Length: 417
Image (cartoon, rainbow, N blue to C red; front, top):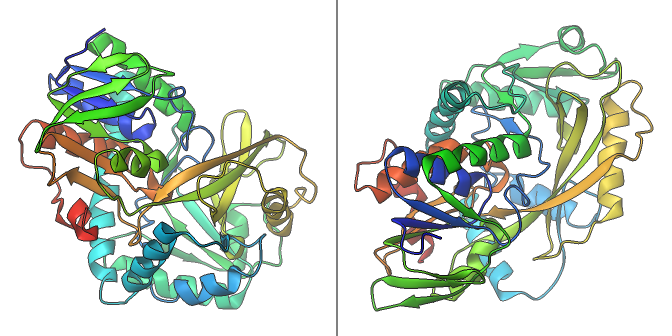
């Protein structure tokens, strides 16, 4: 076991595994510890969407008022469990501030740069390593049942064009021609041709399989317990598999990152946002391209043998229990928009905790308190989509290189960490 690697990564999800890949490509010796198994967290069964079109952050004008209405319904697309939790209260206060229109253009520009670069890296990485992960570039079709929703979408599409996002506005007939399984009572759609999709678990595991050839050690079922640190540096990381004394540490543990950060006296402004998916055996016929059932906030992804419905954002803390009402809401949404989907078979039900920052941007950078600590977390619903570019930026940061994309908007310091 390499106990003195150049970099020790804590977290074996999409962000940690992609960081390990690009660090190894740069020549660094890398060890990675994961408390469960690789791809066992948010990467396991999410929608698998790679979406350079999705650049309007969670914190945007109008979201707060809509969210307050949804909070009254436990089966709504967005739900916050009422409770006294100081960290949640602080997060909501920061979220409210980030929803102002003045902050939105900067956040959108940052997400556009990240997602465009990541989309290209996906193609390069998958081709170079011959990764079997069901990658397809078929675009993403957002479908609207109401004229109100469609009119709002058209305004958003015009806004996205200012950030060089290619959009196609579609009538009802054009939308159904693109996806014949849609019911005829829809109002129309917006198509984003740049977007793509894959099986997220297969992608993460396929990248992980390449790492052994590059000398990376992956320690599954290994939990980081304590950090030994001097005033400005982490000297050692105690784990259930032994003690590591790395030159640098990367904290990429998703929703578990704040708890690990507290062991170092760091406060990471994140809340776990629970998402759900329902995966069924691929039916015949089946949707041909990824869909977004917009009013219900449900994504539909067709994989080789699976049809997956994913959605909801539930702030209930570190709670892993399945909420049957939310699962049923996803199933109901499928029947509202798609023919022959009125009664979904049971299939595989999954939920995962996504690390959400108050302003919708990830936290990527170095800690001011510990010079050899890097952090990469807070990607929210974009963990898979932004994994390659995050990994590359971390490798550049670790190697003392100038990052391809400026990290100031993603700095830990913006929340006082």
